[in-house]
Length: 169
Ligand SMILES: Cc1cc2nc3c(=O)[nH]c(=O)nc-3n(C[C@H](O)[C@H](O)[C@H](O)COP(=O)(O)O)c2cc1C
Image (tube, rainbow, N blue to C red; front, side, top):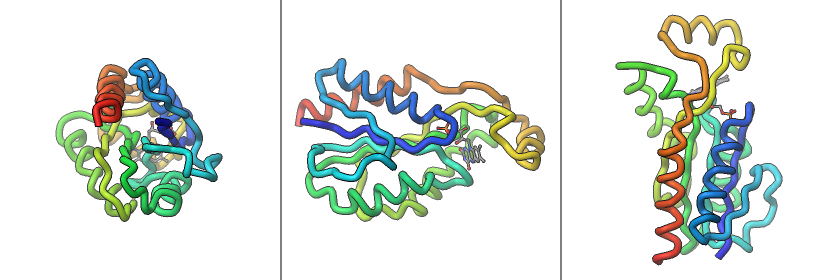
C-alpha cells in the first residue's frame, strides 16, 4: 500500500505539515510518499491520497484544487483525506469561529466529485511579510497574532488516525 501525501504551498508551512503527516504515517507502518502536487503526474500507483493546500482568500491554491478535480476526480475505492492550512490559530473569539466556517466555502470552491473521508483545517504560519499592505491593515484591525500557529499534536493525531484507518481496513 502506497499513500500519496500531496501538498501545495506558497511559504512552506503546508509542506512541513505534509512532511510531518508522511513521517507519522511511515512510523505507523504505512508507506507514504510526500510530493508537491505540481510534480505529480501519475496517480495509478497510489492506493490512497492525503491532499493539502494553503488557503488563500478562502480557496485552495490552483495546483491542489486542479489535482483533486482532475487527477483524482474518480478515486474509485481509494480513500481520500483533505487538509487545509489557514489561520484560525492567529485569531481569537468570534473571528476564530468565523475562520472555521470557511471550511464549507473551501469545499464549495473545490467541488470535489467524490466524498473525502475527512477534511481538516489546520493553522499554519503567518508573518507580516507574507501579506500586502491592505492585508496587514486588516490583520491588525482583527487583532491577529503573527507567528507559527501549527499544532503538531493535532497534526500527529490526525496522521495516526489515517494510518489506523488504512491498516485496519
Ligand atoms: C495572501 C494571503 C491570503 C490568505 N488568505 C487566507 C484565507 O482566506 N483563509 C485562511 O484561513 N488563511 C489565509 N491565509 C493564511 C495562510 O493560509 C497561512 O498563512 C498558511 O500557513 C500558508 O501556508 P503556506 O506557508 O504553506 O503557504 C492567507 C495568507 C496569505 C499570504
